[in-house]
Image (cartoon, rainbow, N blue to C red):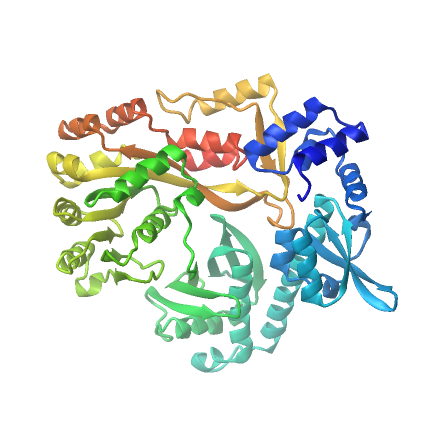
Length: 569
């Protein structure tokens, strides 16, 4: 907010509703959780949101507006683009005449934001009258954009289903304009909802469309089953698959281009009992990759990874179950290493993202191109850095070790539950202990948890009884040697338009990073079990995923339920 903490403190203390102690406590929490001081004061119950807005209205010399009592016209709201309105926390809620000149009423959380006001005036070409509104009211008011998208989605689908043909040649039906519109609308809506996957499932009496958002599936819409053959055929045409093949699984991909998006879509079609099931994985093609900090790594783990990737050779492994973010972590590391002076090559199954200046090979077992064969060929290409999608067998493991031994930095993934388990897994595959000990740089184990929605986050103070009950509940999830620290305050999302009522928006990683120290090398050579390796790593300062998760709970990033959900084994 464009009011300094000192000015805010002076204004609020003058109101007589809070004292210096309350303000200091709120300021301390606001700094720790990267939130607004006013928001924290409201959350603590020190002052009401409405009264805070009225005090700030007097300070800024503007009027307070209660948006909950106003019906906002969609055409007014859309004068400001949705992304800008949400980012700047403002919305046009009406118009009025001033000296025969039309002016827009703009509700804002921060009417002191001159840049936002200037943008609104230049973008609309109209005079702007700023008002202050509560964040809760404004958040609900911004739902007019989402309601518009949802209504448009349902309306377009309904109209096109009614227009579509359900009989005739499938290839021709797939080129029917209503069918094209239906699929395009589903994809556009999925992108707007931040979905990672679209599921088209044929049931006895319905065709159900489901989206996976933040790792969990949700039902979106039920369509007439009559449209199913044409819709599946349309997907097959785009993905260059056989339209008349319904008996065996097919995989393909296509690119979806729109005004604001370029999205690579990976397609998987399988023959199910009631008809073919389609899953489309959406891969946003962006020039920007996440940073290691944005992935959720702690300062200690960041430093270990930075040291490991600066070494000219050795092996870095990312471990975890399917969907835990392993590939994203490796892509982030590759992006950091991607410089003109190095040659980077990958062998993947499948290629998730197209990265400039990196040579990427797709595994194709049908023609004998396996991870091991691809890696063998890449070693003849004068590489500096190599990435192998997954180490699945002895041959691939031996080739990876050979690459790391001969002066290359090699990145790969394994399916293990924690970092320490990666070492016995490779030994079980058939890797020699002395070779693994001398080539392994680092193991990163991870899971993904849903982040609490910043728009509706609220805190809950735990009573001593609640803390004790929670500690007992969590005993079953911790390993021996792990200290359980229960925070006195936890956070959760109440649910709002922005997060579709879930209380969560986006995901973040919880990690454990095991560095291959001299002591760990000795344990590898002696074929020590995973528990012994983990105990040594903990002595050296490794933080477990569970501990990392608890710290993120304490910081207000996620919930205890989320951490326990993903760390169950």
